Amino acid sequence: MFKTVLFPIDRSREAQEAAQVVVNVVQLCSSRLVLLSVVESPSDESEQIMTSPEAVAQLLQKAQALFSQQGIQAEVLEREGKPAFTICDVADEIGADLIVMGCRGLGLTEDGASESVTNRVINLSPCPVLVVP
Image (cartoon, rainbow, N blue to C red; front, side, top):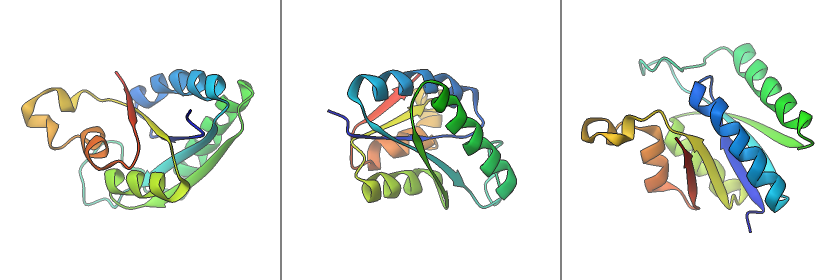
């Protein structure tokens, strides 16, 4: 059903909590797992910006090890750009059947809905998006 699952990760608690859902989906569907970290230029004031290549490499390595402990081989990708657009571009590029994302809750209010990366991905994605609250 879901041959390729894309899991965009950052250092947020929500992304860490979504990891268990990713494990379940990938194991259930025998999916290919692709981990993605998007490095955003520092013009945005988001607290989750990762500009250090070392920090990104460490995050991806840690996530890959976490999935490896569960018997899941994960591919890793690092890209630069606007997170929502980059996530959707990568999903299209790798032929993702599903994107799994943690939700920071910003999309639950009218004020935050247009600013949420998750909401933008839902609206732009070439495939279904599973949002883990």
